[in-house]
Length: 421
Image (cartoon, rainbow, N blue to C red; front, side, top):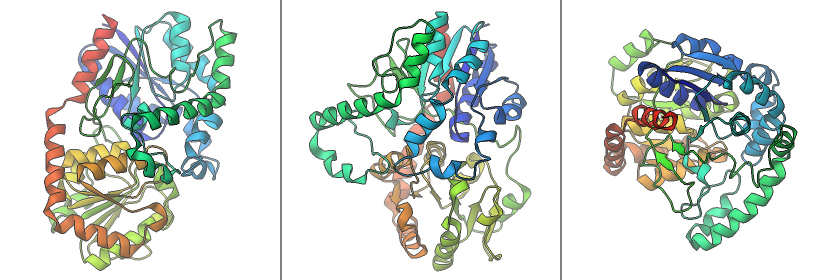
C-alpha cells in the first residue's frame, strides 16, 4: 500500500477530479490524502479520503465581497489568482504541504499548487503534475484562446512560428509574476527555477492530462512524459447525494428541458445571467432548469410554469435528460456536457473558459454567446439552432461515444501506481 498526497486548489471543478482519482486509488488499497482548502474538509472526508488543510482557505477569502469579481475578471482574473492568491500565500502553502509530505510515497500537483514541486524536490520525493484543461499547455501548435485578449484569435492561422514568439513574450511576463517561488527556493537551499510558472509546474517524473482526447491531442511542444487519461468524473455535492425529488419529478413530467448553470465559481458573479435566461426560455416556450447556487438574488423574481430553480444538481444525472446546456465554460461542466452527448451554448467568464468554449465550437457541439452580449434574444436564437439543427446533436453524440470509451480514473490510477513503483 502506498500513500498518495494529492494537492489542489480552486473551485469544485478543481476538486472533483481529485476526489474521483483519490477514490479510485483507495479502492485499489492505497492510502490517499487530499491537500486543499479547509472549506472542503467535510466533502473529502465524507468520501473516506484523508484530508490535510493547505492555505489559503477559500472560505476566508470569500468573505471579501470583491473576491470573486477579481478572480473572474476577464483580463486580470488569472493574474489575480496567481499573484495575489497563490504567490502571496506560497510560504504558508509550502509549510502546510511539507507537514504532510514526509511520509507520502508520491505527490500529485495541481498547476497552481506552486509549493508542490518545491516540497517534492527538497524532500527528494517523486511527483506527478496534473493539468485539467488544454489551455495550461500553452502550445504553439495548438494555441490557446486567452481570456481578455480576443484580438489574438485573428492570429490563430499564423502557425507555430508566430505562437512560439508569443510564448517567449508570455514567459517573460509570467517570470515577473513568480518572484516568490524563487525566493522560497533560495531560502530552502534549492536552485532558482528558470520559469516556475510555465516550466516549473510540469514534473520531470511525468504529467497527466485529466481531460479527454476530444478536447485536445498531444502536441510536439507538450511536456515530456505527458499522458492524456480522459476526464475523471465526480459530481456529488455531498457523498451519496443525487437528484432532488423536485427535480426528478420535474424531469418526469414533460419533455427534456434546457439547463442553465454557471458552475461553482461564476455563479457567485451571475449578474443578470438567470434573468436573461428566463427571458430566452419564454421566447422559446421550452422547459428549463436553473442551477442558481445559494445566492437568493439568482432566483427568478417570480415563478414561471415550466421553469424550476435549484441550488445544485449532480450533472451526471441531470444532463443526459436535457435538450441542451447553457454554461460558462468551466472544464468540469464542459466535461459533463460532452459526456451527456447534448449540445451546449457557452458564455465564457474568464480564465480557461474561452479556450474550452472554442474547442467545443470546433467539435461542432456548441455555440458561443459572449458574456457582454448575454441577452435573452441572442441566447434564444442560439438555442433554437442547437435544438433544431441535427448536426449539433450528432456531433455531441460522437464526442460522448469517445468519452464513454475512456476511463479517466483507471488510467490516472495506473500511471500514479507506476510512478510509485
